[in-house]
Length: 232
Image (cartoon, rainbow, N blue to C red; front, top):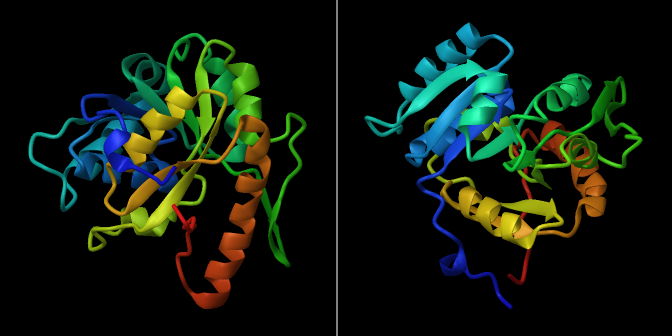
């Protein structure tokens, strides 16, 4: 069946929380969802830093007046959101996720963390005992509905107020097809994006690892490459 955006659920009323919302990727996603009029909560270990980041995002070009963008500590954001995006550095991933298991119970959790290392030869994928970052998250969040998505979205593109469309596909891995639909609908809130179901959590490791290839491509060609799936 061909991709049909009209079949996606309405997610415009959901609150999106971003754990790691003061980092480049989290901040960029927060900006794009705020531009779409989505209610956004910025989470950080420092509530003060989160609040400052939220004020800055709310004032950026393209964010509709009256759009709710607020910041708070990670625990408060996890409790107050319908969908929570994990966008923290890999070295703090396990500890951050584990600490939020109780407030994230019953929530849709989107993990966009890529376990990567860097050396003189460039970026490379790091081994993860659980298989992938999202599988690690799923193991730490047994009462949450976990998926991987937004792994390949360029932070500079997200943050650039002069860019109105970001034409790429967001690959979604999850055990829950309903979650895939909700996250695809969230991705579609950003003009140009499509959310594409890409298999179960066990297939996420190569999606996370492929980010190393994209970084190498971007460095070589001075671009902000993404993924587009053909024949859909």
